[in-house]
Each structure stands twice: as structure tokens, then as C-alpha cells.
Amino acid sequence: MMNTTAGYTKLYRGLRDNPYSRDPEWVAVYVWLLLNVEWKQSSGLLNGHKIQVEPGQLVTTELEIEKESGVPRHKVHRVLECMKRESIIGKDSGSRNTLFTLLHWQEEQGTPISTQ
Image (cartoon, rainbow, N blue to C red; front, side, top):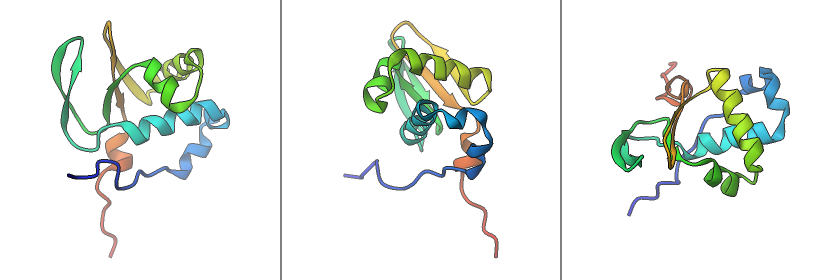
């Protein structure tokens, strides 16, 4: 059985330039998303329909993010709306859950380019 939690996630220093990075709860939600999005293609359920979940995407709920990140739900909601407004995430909300997409995931987490 393969360990799906193995590996690493890149966290760019440029994050410090984002004014929201001074808010520890914003950073907690962002890092939680980075650590939990798919790193390879998979499937999931959105509104009871099976969908293809691409790398950089995650089907979840604000309640699950609250439980796992420790950030209060009202703050999770505000942070996610801020991230959407700032074009950091995309959201496809359903009645039961939401498909979140980290819009720059491929550029930030994709295969490193060899610099020989």
C-alpha cells in the first residue's frame, strides 16, 4: 500500500509579500489547502456526482477545514472568500461540499526544471 502522505509541498518565500500572510489563520488555511489538495488525478463526489479531481484540487467542506486546521468556521469562510477574490483559489460550491482549486498550483508545485 502506497503512503499518500509521503513527499513534500513547496512553500514559496514570495508568500511573505502577500499582505494577508501576516494573518496566522489565513496562513493556516492556505497551508492546509496546499497539504490536502490532490497531487495526482483522482475522483471525488460533488453534489452526489462522481467527478475527476485534478492535481491542485480538493473536494471538501468549510467544516472539515475548520476541524482539521483549527481555524474557526466563520474565519475559514472569510479567508476562502478573500482567496477567491485575490484569484488564489477557485470554488465550485455545491449543496453538500465544494471543489476548491489552487489556481497557481501547477506553476508552484509542478515538476522542477533541471538547471545544470
